[in-house]
Image (cartoon, rainbow, N blue to C red; front, side, top):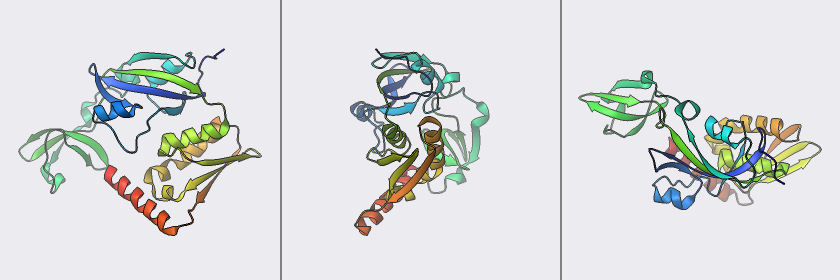
Length: 242
């Protein structure tokens, strides 16, 4: 007999997010991502492990998980206030075209201005209007999802969290005497996303997994050239994202 999903449960879900009818913006289905032009090598396909209520996805979707059972498939329409927020006109700025240096400004161009990401919505002479709102701000979105299973094993919970934050699914975890030792590959030492989120990951493990201490241990391969190559590739990928 399946138990109802509650806040704090670790679950694995597959999902597809849509807006404006059938326009796909997010999915755990690799083929669907490719067909809709949103595929990324760093994407998690096949399903995500999330802690219900921990803010791993938008509020409206998390709320819909609660009370469901493993094996449930369905859909939910989510309004802006429980999705990606309303559209804030104060986040639309007019900037000088000189901000773009050697880049040509055009409508639809994704940019970063003063550390904030936005999209060009209009070019008038030497002024450019940039919208810093989330691309889905002010929109209703629909998620179709399936709850595949509930994660009970503590080591698997930790692996699921790491996959969610880093995309790495092959990880060595040892739990002994209420201490979780996590062997992280060298490449993570150069991953800016990981360096900013490692403290949050540890906090979530301590709060939601049955351990009292978290140890990160860097794991180096036998071949130092291999480690250096992986690190360079990681830096290139991070730079490309920015």
